[in-house]
Image (cartoon, rainbow, N blue to C red; front, side, top):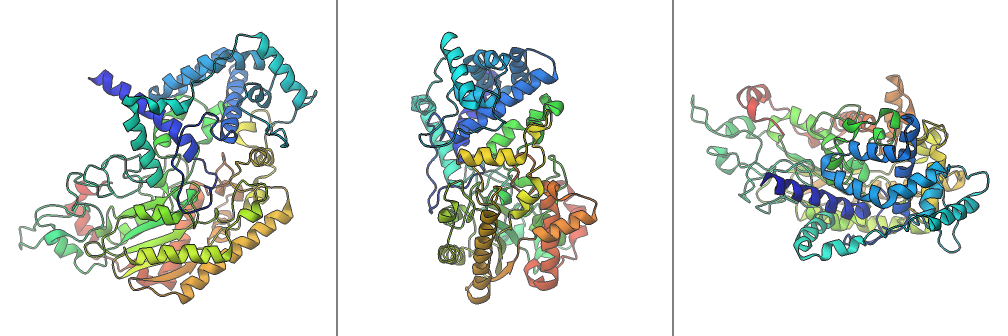
Length: 582
């Protein structure tokens, strides 16, 4: 029985990984309201396949160099590092491509040449030949032609079975459809009562939303007002229930009545979901089995780490820095807010596709507590990987329409007394200014890959997370920031002029400048505020510092948003200390 369950878990991880590859990119999603359902086309839109190939081949080559081993031994070493759930998939790929990769690396072909010769990188007609590394002395085209001649004389390369056929098997069809449903709708994979809350951490479970405490009862979930003051059971999962034997008063009534209980909800993008790829996955000098221990969890959370994020983080960070979040501060201010959090974010989220994502938001106007909603799509309305990037940016008119529609929807879902904070777009010139001439983790061993090279490679493949900012073209960077400012001004005007029945609206600038100033005072460098692998997202340090800045602004300018401090917090912790876990 145990063996069959492990086989299922291995199969599930592989299917999730394959389906996730297309949907979990930090690149912006196509414009529009409804995201496309994930599928499994071989080639994976070519660009992402090429990036993956070049990264993996680079790691293999560097592992062989660092350990002074053969390429074959380096491939085996990498697969041994991978957790058991995914090792089978790694060895399948090693069997298919390993001998060819080894032969070409042994002939001093770099990762660009290897991946083009394997046809995992492809040059589209009329498009440039994309490469991460400096071209070989003979020229990239000549090196690729030579590599292809070598491939023709070697054992025929087996064609990797088209991934699109995997889900055609009757035994896998239902599982595939369930995974696609989770990825498309951003709802928990395990949610037996259908209340949009789960007892499972990943797969859009309680890393993203407060943990359900009874997944067989649809009326029990985080954020609701207590049923009969929770005298007999914990209906809102905050760990406070039962009756004080001294006076017969329910604890929830004694400690939480009139306490301004409220939840926190993020409507956001990959920055809010906290996209992160551990740098040790690409730094061979730090690489070990321990480095990849969190790989299955990262896959099943779409390479996002909401449990450590700026708005809804609740666990101590294991990816560097520290965790400080709006949720944790609200919980500290009022212990009755325990577990009342929702991170409704997705990689590539923008004001347009958020109109679809927002439907996964869980709040009952009649039964639940008010909430603080943070609306923060800080970049993807100006970020895309298109060659004519300016033409694909959201216009101020579109931004106005998208945000007002979202607010109108929230007005039908949020309980009265809620609050919405609109966050302006970031000024992404910070990225190029602080990273372009630094070495990427992949280039640190041989000093051969800078962020400028990475940005150009992604842009060439049209998978750049932001062609407008991650570019040596200063004029384009300035124009992108100009549009971002225009869209921020739209948000500012909405907060000033629009009125809704169930919530008030506030606006705040994205606090990047203040975050950088605070970090400098602490002795840090600006580049440390940026994710090292993708060179695009806020790092764990930036997230934690941003929380403090947001909190101080709210305390001084909008104290009503945060609610009052609960004088019974110490008593709650003393009585319910064993029920305060997340």
